[in-house]
Amino acid sequence: QRHSAMSDQAKLKAALDLMRRLPPSKVDDNLADIVGISPGVQDDLLATVDQPLRVETDSAGRDFIVCDYNRDGDSFRSPWTNEYVPALDDGMKPAARLRQIEVLANDVFDAYRERYYETGVSSAYVWDVDDGSDFAAFVLFRQDA
Image (tube, rainbow, N blue to C red; front, side, top):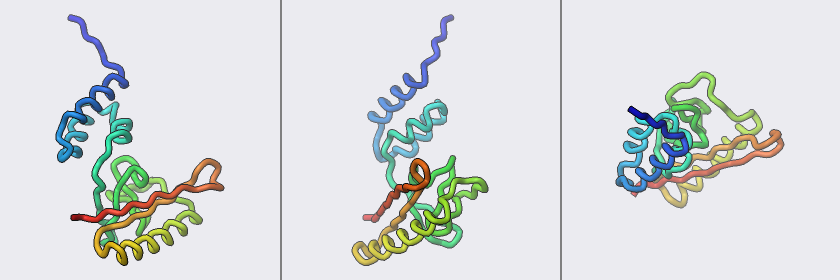
């Protein structure tokens, strides 16, 4: 009996092909099922497949949007409390200078969201780029229909 092992690239290609054929309304379930079958493709698959924005609630009761920019493993960092949900003791956090910028950005964009959209959730995330003298930011808005 001859067994042939698929390379990780071949597995990823097959997973992406499968995702294109499955109903988009069940993208989260489909991703979880594929990762359960082939855990080696998880990072590349999650980075490639667009997923609907999800909202979590932190320990202070504030809603925030979860995405790759605030993910560490299976936990997500709240821009409001700077804590991970579910809790993660050694998760990545921005340096103090960037955290101040992140807090200000969240206050500003939350006021903008409230004024122009009235409902929904906004989240801003800031992180170091290169040598620490530059930074990047990502701002998300989600409004439920």
